[in-house]
Length: 216
Image (tube, rainbow, N blue to C red; front, side, top):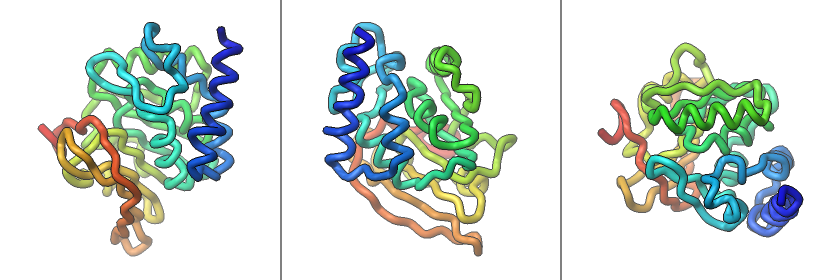
């Protein structure tokens, strides 16, 4: 069965990512390596490489591979980068980030999800990832500043603490828009003068970011 997953993983990269314009080799290599099935519900593992989001525990989802790849490519990550992920979920994106960047800090508000993600990441020997239970809208101040921040849930605006915890020259990618509707995926760069430049990438649909500086 594992051999089947390996074959499906390579096919997913070719058909769902490369054919849709994913060109960043570090992103492609990460997707070829990380076993998405390990982050899925046992009963849904056969769907691991389908082209779409899948349900996980606590009413949450593991995002469509292409959307995650698109977000990672837009961040233009370097192997020396320190990255903050808001919304650990299954831990799949954190594993992909760990393949590309030097240090990954990921926050999840739901303890059960955080603990499971931590266990799977440990099982797969990702030693450069730290998982924390907390309010992602407030970031992770103790580990700041970050070269890049990826927010895996939709917010009404960019939380102020995330802007503050980003290095000058750093990037945030975040879905902004209505709760439960369609959102706009935004790439926001912090210029060296401290001002922000915003770019709209594509329309997406994410679960809401709940927290003190987001949806209540």
